[in-house]
Amino acid sequence: MPVEVANESEIAVDEAELAGVCRFVLGEMQVNPLAELSVLCVDVEYMSSLHERWMGEKGPTDVLAFPMDELDTARPDDPEPGPALLGDVVLCPAVAVRQARAAGHSMDDELILLATHGVLHLLGYDHMEPDEEKEMFGLQQKLIEGWRAAPREPVTGAAARGESGTR
Image (cartoon, rainbow, N blue to C red; front, side, top):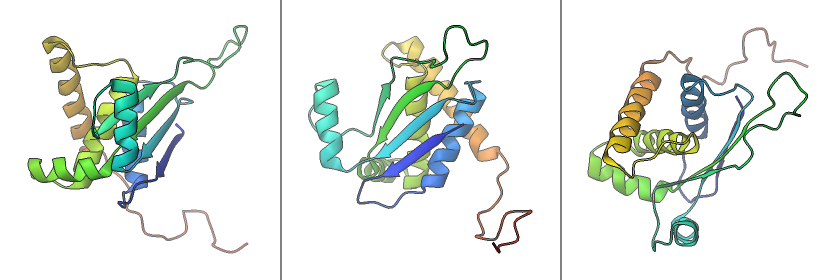
């Protein structure tokens, strides 16, 4: 599942972890494995401009989700679905740092929560009504717990199995 993460903020983020949690969420939500997602980390100024332009609200926010209009790029006569262009999740690590401090956890934990939240928005979930909020936040918590419990291999910098390291 292609997930591209770009960090254009002034704060270092674990791009591999962000991509990993997004792939996990998409997999758990049974999204087509060819689906494509973009995650962009931006600074406060850029997030403020997006927030005002698209939501009509001043100041930065923590996460925005921009779904693509076209969810299936396959030709109509193709029996297999094409890659789905899900859209973009935009995160603001500076806002995540503030929220993490207030919540008593790490920025990485906050970014995992925000990335999960953004992906759920791309998949059509919302929290405007109490019943929608209960459903979305319950699913979000379940997905985050699943991500934390999922086995992952540590990143060591060593050659992958089967690679000799020489060319």
